[in-house]
Image 1 (cartoon, rainbow, N blue to C red):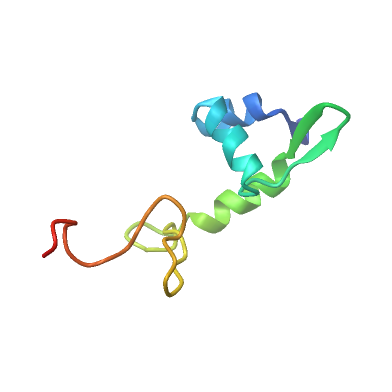
Image 2 (cartoon, rainbow, N blue to C red; image 1 turned 45 degrees about the vertical axis):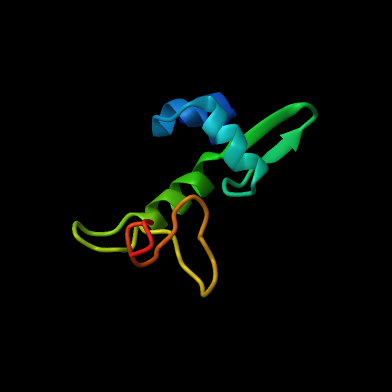
Length: 86
């Protein structure tokens, strides 16, 4: 039987990123989590659903972060030019 809840370190291993990245994403509310005492838990079903919602067919833009007017959309900024004033 597969475990439903994972620790942040297990999530990091599961998705292939550094554990600190997962802790930061949890703190920003980007990954749904719950606390049980001092333990932080991530529901693997919700995580999988969130990841599946970001992955589309090859060549699609569905994996892109949503953009709103005047928003940088997290780490990435969609804009014109190359940042050199052009």
